[in-house]
Length: 471
Image (cartoon, rainbow, N blue to C red; front, side, top):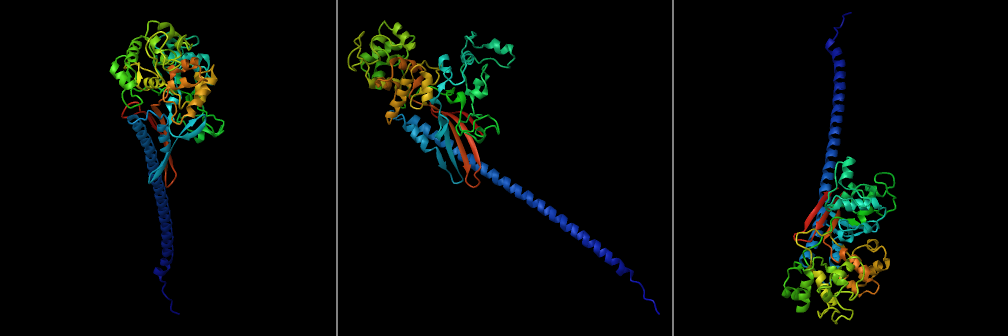
C-alpha cells in the first residue's frame, strides 16, 4: 500500500492559529482596559470641569450679593434720608436674597444666636477701643485680668492696670509679640491679650463669619466645640467690634459742620439756630473738654458761660448736674437760668447731633453704638445698673417707624434717667457706617456653595472694603 506524505504545513498551522486567537483576545482585553480607563479619566475630568464651572458660578453669585449690598450702602451715603433711620436697613434686607442666570445668593447675619437676613451692622456692637473696664466686665466669661489686659493692650503707656499686663509681661514669657499700644484692628486680635482664649473670643463662630456653619452645629464631631442647639454662640465677637467708625458726613449727605471753626451763618443755616445760640455754640466749642453729649444734660447758656467746668465733670461721671437737664429747658421755650441764650429745642438738638462735630480732624475716635440696631443684651452691658433704661431705649425705638434720628430723641422718654443718658452718650449714636457682609453663593445646576465675607466702610465715597476673604 502506498504511503501518503505527511502535510507538515497543515499540522503546524493549527497551533499557530490558536496562539493568534489568544493574542487577539489579550489585545482586545488590553484595549478594553485602556478604553475603560480613558472613559473613567474622561468622566473624572468632566466632573472636575463641571465642579470648576459650578464653583465659578457660585463665586460670582456670592460676589453679586456683595456688590449689590455695597451699591445700597453707597446710595444711602450719597442720598441719605435724615427723617428715617430704618430705610437703609429695609433696603439691605431686600437685597439679602437674589438670583442670577447661573446661581443665587443669600446674605445673613446672627443676632442673639439666630440668623436674620442682611449684613451684620458693626455699629450694633460695642467698639472694644472705646469700652472701659466696667463695660468689658459685663461680657460673659470676662475676667478682671483680661479686661485690664485689653485696656493695657490699646493704651499708649507702660503702666499696667490693677490686674493687667504691659510689654514686660509678654517679653518675660517669650510670647513672640508685645502689646500694640494702639487701637485694636480686629476682634481676632483680642486672642493675643494675656488670658484671652479663642473659645471666649469666637465662641462657636470659629471662622468669624457671623453665621452658623455645619461644623459649628455638630457637637463633638468636629472643631470647634459646640452644643449643637441650632443657635450660634459667637462669644465676645457678638458684642465687641474694632471695625466701627465715625463719619465726617452728616445725615443730610454734606460734610459735618465743625463747631470749632464754623461761622455763625453756617450754624444758622445748617442747624436752625439763631444768632445768640450760634454765638453760644461757638463759645462752648472753644472749651478744651467740650463734648456734644454735654448738651443732653446741661443748658446751652450755662455751657457757654464761665461756670462750665464743674458741670462738665458731673456729666462725664454720669451724674445729673444741678440746673437744666439738657441743652433745652424743661418748658422748651424758656431761657436758661444762667444766661439769656434761648435754650435749644428738640429739632435744634437733633440737627446738632446729626450734622455737627467737635472731633478734631485726623484724630482717632472709636465708632459708636447704633441705638437703633444694638441688641438689648448689648444695651444692658452699657447700662449694667439700669436695665429699665436699657429696655426703655428698645421700647422707644420700636415705637417709631423711622427709629431714633438722634440720641437727643431719648430726652422725650420719662423712663430713661438723665444719669443713663449721660452714661451712654459718649458711646452711642443712631447711624451705622461699617457692615460685615457674609454672602453665600449657590450654583444653579449643582447646588455647590461658595461663601465670601467682606467688611465694608461706607463713611466715605466710594465705600472702602476693609477686609475680604473667600471660604
